Length: 309
Image (cartoon, rainbow, N blue to C red; front, side, top):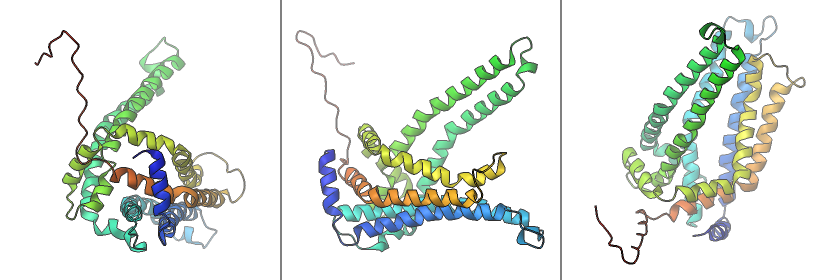
């Protein structure tokens, strides 16, 4: 199925009653949930006047609340996104049943959690050595004058930092390969009647074999959605970070205005494009063959024997 067919079928499927509103509900909870975590973190980081909540001797406890909220949001988000996958699959099959499908990821929490843990371990295996190497280069760059006497400190620092950047850039393709191998896990989770974590991972690797390039092209096709969405998500968490750095805010009240503005812009972006994009991805994964397509064999040239080794 080509791009134009998926686009046409997604448009037809979205005519199902309540299809847009279910995806929009997912976007509202995701967007404003992230903004709420950011705003709560800023509010609790502000020292209150004398007699206020910040001077009750519990400021250190309150400072942990944003971290707990952030961790809770990170843990719950994959289950919530799995519900979106289930809803998009129902819409693509024209049997949309309302908002109940958004909670399906929580009902299948154990197999999804096992896949998340296994994938997290695979991410950490290359990330930890790379982070350690980059941190070592950073420390060496700080002590360049002591470690390399007689050599300009700026030259040594730039050389070591460039090595660190090389390691980071070399890590990106490896992490991308891991990500694309397991992109079909949420869809298989909703298809299998009795899903098991390791089985889902193996099936995803099998179904994605030979189709990673097609999915990459599809991701690039929607760069206008993915890139602004990621940037606005970063901006929504930017003001609490700036509060900890020696950076002045652009105007009074920017700590709450910046996350709220980013949330509104993200929501408008999601309302405009999220339903169609979610259904198109569901159609893409639904049409992947269960077994990888065999590679065509190269015909032997005339006059040569097709040797076997």
